[in-house]
Amino acid sequence: MVIKAPMLKRGDTVGVIAPASPPKQELLRNALSFLQGLGLVVKMGSNVHHTYGYLAGKDDERLEDIHTMFRDQDVKAIICACGGYGTGRLATQLDYELIARNPKIFWGYSDITFLHTAIHQKTGLVTFHGPMLSSDIGLQDVDEKTKETFQQLFESKRLEFSQQTSPIQTIVDGKAEGPVIGGNLTLLVSTLGTPYEVDTRGRILFIEEIDEEPYKVDRMLNQLMMAGKFKEAEGIIVGDFKNCEPDKRKDSLSLDDLLDEYIKKAGKPALKGFYIGHSSPSLALPVGSMGRIDTYRKSFTVESGIKEEVESL
Image 1 (cartoon, rainbow, N blue to C red):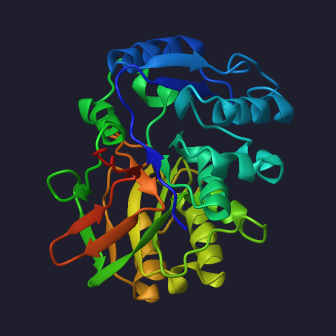
Image 2: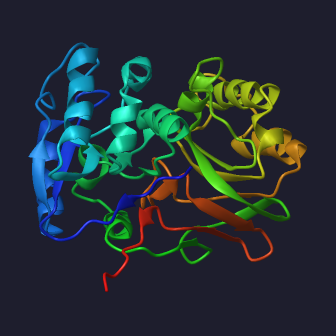
């Protein structure tokens, strides 16, 4: 069963947490004014300012912030400050029953992919793969479209990705429909063989990546292919692969070579070129909502990730 959280309204409280690596504090402070400008009240997690090596605190500290925000009835949305490393360490200890009982907007991307996959598959809650505070919103040169993508939390409206929003290109022609699942390629591969293994059966899979050379992307795409994740999917969306160019190995296959090798071979309707992931602009989409691919129109549409309001009589 798919669960959608209620939409945000001006005056609502949103919780800010760091479930992966510690955010850059100055950039985080810059971003908080953006949330306040949306008419939201910000509540900081108790451990947002902690550091434990490359983690924003020990596992129990980061877990407590997640659980506290889902438990707090005043908090209507949970926004991740940044990605980095470490969310996979939390998956086995998350209280999924607590999350299912308290459906809320949960927003982030990159390393947060592991949490999106685990939470949606264990609870049915639609979560949001979208730009984060210190990583994106706090930057001086943040694209206005990156800011605008938060508006989907304030209204129930279908999202439409087209050549007007992204430089879309066709990999495999066709049409496909299914719930959307996916995120960062490295993190999706890290779910394989675990109780939180990404399930692409009957779904539209989307992938994005940053700072991985083609030979590493090759290895990860091959692993997804061998695990049947492309074959089982209804369709495939390729987001931004930022800085995924040859460095150590100058004699290299290109990213397009790899997409042709693995995604064309899968034969499922597929589009590439979306500003989804570590891109500018960075556009958000709901994980778990119904998506539709039409390569002939070069379009990808996704149903709203929030619950429609029902007017009382």
